[in-house]
Image 1 (spheres, rainbow, N blue to C red):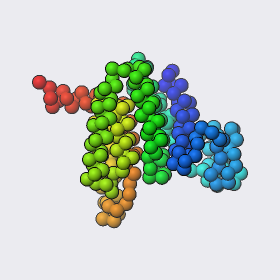
Image 2: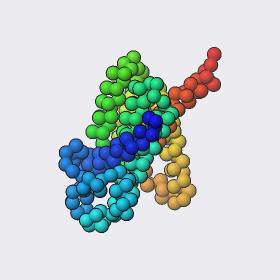
Image 3: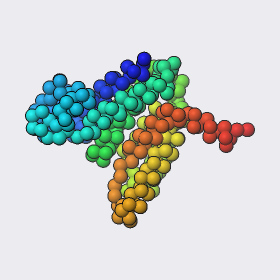
Image 4: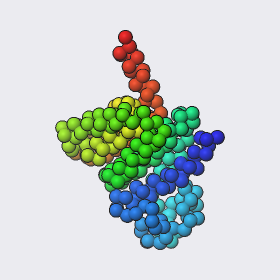
Length: 252
């Protein structure tokens, strides 16, 4: 039942995430002002702002100027709904703190993925808000975990900072800050998150080189979405992966 309720909640939060991802990089307020068509500036009516449904009803076009509405909007809403439902099913509802942290983490990752794909930027405002939310939730629900979360944040941010120093063209400071924030949400599970992020990014890079040749080496590929992918996997099964690794290689 909770997972079913998570679907409409995810659709709503997904719609809000698209607003944040659109406005914050443009230094616009995401809490004040009605949504407007970015092409003609017409205020979007409430009945045209229903997640997914309105996009389908309008056939993906603005009601007034008929300019196409990018498919990333309904896809982000559906993606957030799927993430919310899956997180509830996998984490369960016994540990409310971990579940709330997981849902907040999913929302943060969706916003970051959208901004990095569209603008090649991970806004400091979004990262700062995500860090504050993580610390606040942990402080209220599980204060004893805060030291470990802080250590994980420092370690993850430190690792990516070294990578950024060695390979500045392939890693930005936004990615470094994102890794640190991920540590606050995931704790020790941030380790497999980073490994999965690097592995998936490397696979995409190799695929681009195989398809386009050496010229693909100069193509900028946002790394935030790969970290987000690793973060989702680690959220769902990161601690199990860490336990398996420790038991396999360090037991006794």
